[in-house]
Image (cartoon, rainbow, N blue to C red; front, side, top):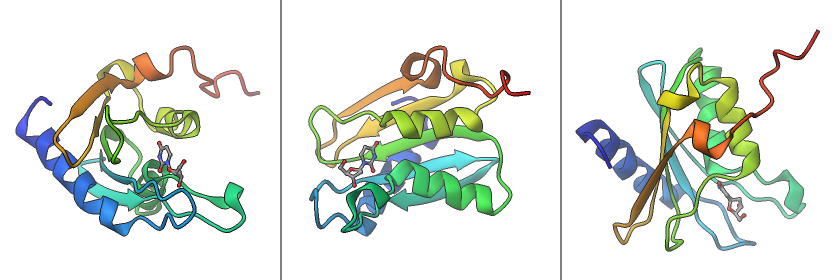
Length: 135
Ligand code: THU
């Protein structure tokens, strides 16, 4: 991981994992994001009607957007997976909505054991739907 700021975000994602509500999958996920200069956290929230489940990353992004934040600057996500698991496609698409330059937005996946992997959003969602096609 590069930079003290990203280490801090990873630590917050690890802490946010404690908030996961995952009685069905037992896969606990925490996310921490930097958006418009602020830091926001989220966890996955599952539902007995499985498709209602919300991922940790989108929980954090929607919380940030609801405060007026609009520019996604960095994402950290924590699960128990080894190697650390990357964000799902739906979360990548939501990240893209708020990322002006996907070649400059880093996503770091960690686990509590200390493993880490990172990517640029442009690597995880090449040629994504941008909305520019809309009338
Ligand atoms: N999950 C996340 O929170 N983020 C991801 O990027 C992948 C999956 C959650 C959704 C569900 O609660 C559990 O992990 C298993 O899919």
